[in-house]
Image (cartoon, rainbow, N blue to C red):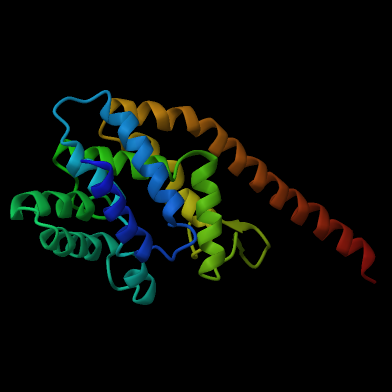
Length: 222
């Protein structure tokens, strides 16, 4: 891929990115991580990989407008249509479409080509470590969801509700054995300790505040 073509695809990507947690900087991080992973793999089609990385989240705005829409599926369709207008063959455009369609963590359609696996891993690495925690908190704020919920006894709820604490326990802490490439797994493992420490410190601060606060309140009330 020459620089002129890259800039053209980059411009299209930039025109579609409006989500603060999935902004253009997320795209660049995924792309750069994917290039890192690709160095350890064989027979990677770099045009497919770079294009899929650039366009993998162009369906985000449609999902944000309608939560019933899967951004990966929609983004794949959008990328395919766009690339066909740029003279790509059906098979090449469809390859990019499939990379994008299978990059989502929750979907039951795992990636099967090396380019799709690299994109999946690079995207998941960006929800690992402190970066992943920061992006999740940012997204929760964007969608008016809290850091945590408590039950009637003011105990933190770990598995229910659309909170950061729930998202960490449902997704973030469980991604570290979900990588397809050795290099992707290696990068994620390097980040895991920081994420675990962040979460545990945050939870300790919450629980300590409530425990001490309830005691102080009971002493203060007549």
